[in-house]
Each structure stands twice: as structure tokens, then as C-alpha cells.
Image (cartoon, rainbow, N blue to C red; front, side, top):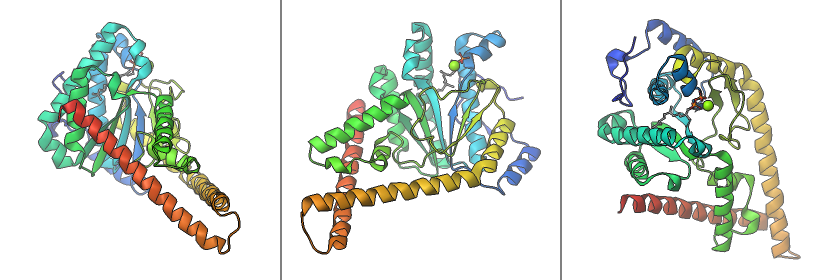
Length: 333
Ligand code: FPP
Ligand code: MG
């Protein structure tokens, strides 16, 4: 059995690798089917696990972190290249002072540890993003987070999104605020606001939506996690507590995904058509408003669509810059 300690790194050493030949064989069988590119996890049940195993509460969270590093490895081995985890919800700030500071301390330690492991991050090509309202975090955690994010931002072989000080409603209202500002500052026209644009303004704007979401501990809720992004995701609720999650639970969830694959592809396709149709309608409407009576409507619509896409790209670049500047300000650059 693997031995864990609290200095545990993000990269388990080779001799601790938990995949044997049989699990590798099963992984290869699974890989004959569709493998989700992006999987999200609600890592629930750390405190129940601690209670059950007569451990301190904080020990349960530490075990939870260790399980996360193991899970990331299983995902990479399967060909899942993006993982998003719910590490700390804005609601979690309401927990006892002691527990909140314990979790903050754990996060600070682990993000600092990540910086000691730069070589490994480069070797795996992992990009780490922290999604959430970073402003709500204590300064030392903010700094560690900003450094890790900044350091790994150009990697693209695998992506780990850590949702920290996150809720989905907060993320969605933030996206709406950004779009409203974009209109006020002249980047956007009100008619540019669409489902598609909102999606790009979410913290996950650069990622494809997760095809599979896994929640442990038997709770059958989303708890304000990725509400927008999981519209077409397969949901998998697993009974075990997060520290008990095993590679077999992951395989079972992927199999569950594969059984639903066809149906979901069809629904996604239909939705994509609706979105495109709606956009065409909107562009048409805008052209009619701009030129009350015009000939050659079709080419005007095409021109309008091109200009709209440019406006949106400029706006999104502006959002990116704003975010980079914010990280720089934390780092005191
Ligand atoms: C849910 O279990 C777990 C959390 C609120 C914390 C999850 C955090 C980690 C696994 C560590 C991640 C750290 C980094 C740096 C990514 P719970 O506390 O709700 O337990 P319960 O449901 O049994 O009460
Ligand atoms: Mg819980």
C-alpha cells in the first residue's frame, strides 16, 4: 500500500504508482471507447472519512489532497487531459474558523510545494489554473496561487483547474458583470451578449465543457459547481467517500459515460444548431436596425457577423489582459 505523509507532493514517486498490469489492461480496454477529454470532480466526504477512521478533521482533508494527486495520475494514464476539481466553495467560508484556516494552510502549502516541483510541472506540461474569486483569499494563499498559475500558464499538455473560493452562481454573475462593463466601455454592443459569449466569460471560458462530472460521498447534488458547464455532461454519483475513491470507481464512471455517449453527442449537436440559428437571427435583426432599407441584405449580414466576431475577440483579449494584470499586481510585478 502507498504510504502517505503530509509532505506529500503533487507527483507521487514511481515506486508508489498505484497502477499495476491488470489496471493498465483494463484502461486499455476502456480506451477502445470514447474517453472524455475533461472530467470534473466534487471531492466530497473528507470529514466523514476522518470521523470514520478516527482521524483529525484536517487529516481527512490531507488524505483528500493525496487522493487528488493519485486521481490526476489515473486521469493522465487514461488520456483525460483536463481535470477540474471543487477544492473550496465560497460557502465553505462559513465553516468554523479553525477548519477554514486549516484548508487555507493546506492550499498554501500545496501551491508552494508545486513551485518546488517546477521540473515535474514542465515534464508533464501541466497548466494549473485557479478558478474563483481569488480576492476572497488571505494574502499568502493569493500569492502562492498567483505564482503557481503564472509559472505554469504556457503549458498545454494537461490542465488542472482548481476551483477555490468558487461557486457557479458567483462565476455566472461575474461573467455578466464583465459583459456589462464591456458594453459600458464600448467594447461590445448589447446585442453581442449571447449564451456563447457568456460561456467564454466564465472562468472556464478557454476550456471545453466537462463531458463527465463525478461526485463522491453519495450526495446527489451539484452544490453550485459548474452549473452552466454541465448542461450536457454525464453525471456520476459514487457512494464512497473521496479519500476512498479508487481507480475502479473512475473506470466505472468512464464506462457510464461511454454508455451515454451517443445520446449526448446528438443533444449537443442539436444545441449547437440552435445556438448558430439564434446568432444568425440576431445578426439579421441588427442589420435591419442599422440600415432601415437596404439591398444586398445577405452580404451586409456577413459583414456584420465578421465585425461582431472582431469586437468579441478584442473584448476577450481585453479580459485576458485584465486577468494577467490582476495576477501581476498580486505578485507585485
Ligand atoms: C469536501 O469534504 C472537501 C472539501 C471541502 C475540501 C477539499 C479539499 C481538498 C481535497 C484539498 C485540495 C487542496 C488543494 C491545494 C487543491 P467535506 O469537508 O465536505 O467532508 P464531509 O462531506 O464528509 O463533511
Ligand atoms: Mg461535504
